[in-house]
Length: 292
Figure 1 (cartoon, helix red, strand yellow):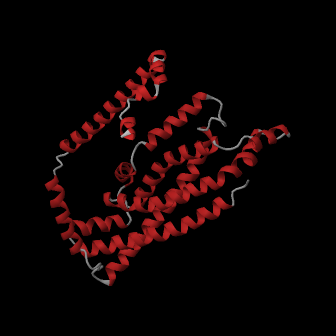
Figure 2: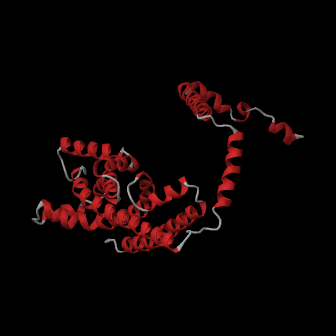
Figure 3: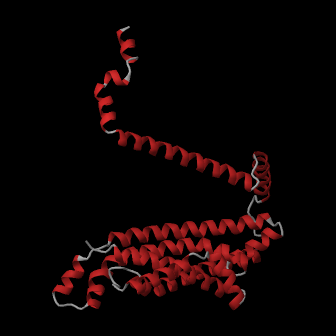
């Protein structure tokens, strides 16, 4: 009984100093209440926006249920994966090799082109704010356009084929690499740079021997990751005529050749898994060799 009565004791009775604190620091308590109200209103606004978004796109539970049913029919039609003939299998494998070549060449070219712009965009390298901000905005504009859009643009410029896909990857990755490289350069430790300058070295020597050895493992790791990612991206841009296995994937889907479609998807998955395994090991080896 005593335990029950003690549990029913009000908070004010248990902590008499709380009332005094509320009176003395009334503004602080009011501020906390206002923050709680703002948080609840923000959550309610986000939930309302989410519900409105579902309504705006025409989402209904029955549409989702029917979609899963049709998806099951398509998956069943894809089994077992079958290229149709050995000639088709060879053509599809050549498409995968072409996709790999596009991803590799585009990634490497973008990395080399973006490296000097990464230095120009780094605050600790370029003191001129006009140049720094101009390069940053240029990288933001290029990065803001999706790879698929760049592929459509380059297909219209140079025509159909893998060259348009390579140019799309170079253009898209150029902006992303420039931003990532500049952030890695800004995060580099400045003590080696200061030591080289103090010992009589030039500014160029301080960058060559003070910054590049620090950021090189990070940059190589980022390039490997983008190569892995671009292998998947190249499959998508091939759909718009930019070469690679995506062109064959589009054709098999358009003609409802689901077994050939699943064979192509299986080839892509195996290729991406192999690249992921190899690049992961290389990244571990590169990061492990980072100078201390």
